[in-house]
Image 1: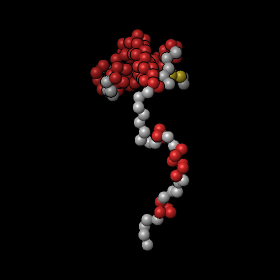
Image 2: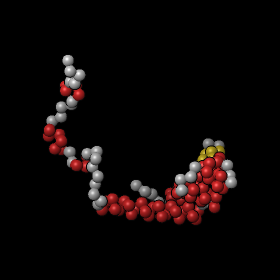
Image 3: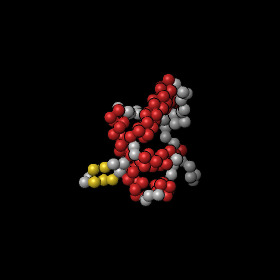
Image 4: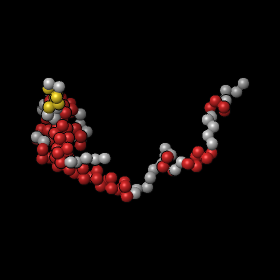
Length: 124
């Protein structure tokens, strides 16, 4: 007796089903650059530029240093602590804030988010 059973392994699909699919429906489809993708890239560049301005103007020097090292240079919190001469816990507080009385307080990320909301900066 053969181990291969086509009734078990294959799922019958009517050929007209495949005619209904567009090439975009295939897993390996990669679209050619179009106006939508270019517009999205331009929007992303604008948002990144605005966020960089927020980082440079709104964050404290220590928060700015932590954000630069963590997000742009890919350093770990431990490495940043060694570079800046502070503990890893303090680096985390500079980046993400602390929770007091059930509320998130401080932190560069929180400040950046608030400024983005205030300025109406959003990325789809």
